[in-house]
Image 1: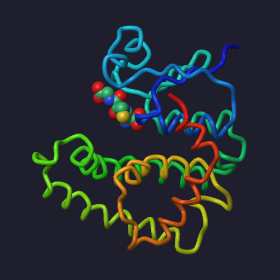
Image 2: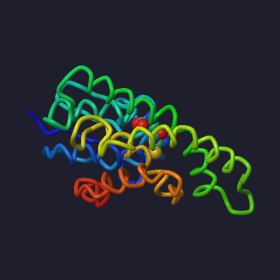
Image 3: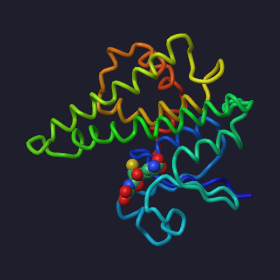
Image 4: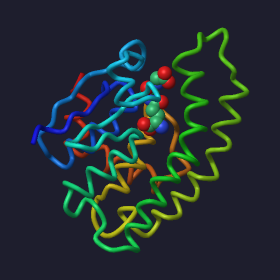
Amino acid sequence: MSKPKLYGISGSRAHRSLWAIEEVGIEYDQVPVDFKAGSKAPEYLAINPNGRVPALVDGDITIFESMAINLYLAKTYGGNLYPQNAKDEALTWQWTVWGISEIEPLQMQSLVQKLFVAEDKRNDKLIASAEKQLARPLQVLDDALSNREWLVGAQFSIADLNLSGVMLLLKMIKFDYANYSNVQRWADACYARPSLARAQARD
Ligand SMILES: N[C@@H](CCC(=O)N[C@@H](CS)C(=O)NCC(=O)O)C(=O)O
């Protein structure tokens, strides 16, 4: 069977799935589709009709959504990276869905203003409001990590990779975790994985 193909550039949300595929350590081909013209080309739309990256093709399965790709990669190839019982699996889904629903929309509001809007046009009220609203989920996460090293089980797992992978965008905008020391400690440990450096060194 041919190697899995991961579509997307590392300077996009594809970095989350590049990290996962590097972490599971399988051979794969990266197709560095960008998120502008590349992701709108007919041959890519046939893979992901949303016109967004990442996407994964592995044998007869084609998947879009970074978190779904990561859960599939971990479950199929990741051994203990994927939880080994139903309770830990449910908690893994919980933190994965939570990251995408509770953190992602707010962090995007801030990131878009800070990185893509000219300084004189920046909506500082929107940034302040988004970052204020982030206090609630970040406090939840900080409390959850107060007596444990990793989110689920006793070792780094796909739950940690998925959530900290989503939160890499907060790192990009140098979000201040001063009030969330457990989050800071956990995020630093996740970001020290050599697999992340390998993913970030990709196109
Ligand atoms: N929820 C999706 C989001 C993917 C996404 O929005 N990717 C951006 C790049 S960071 C994209 O391809 N944008 C192109 C567009 O929206 O046209 C995921 O996590 O995979």
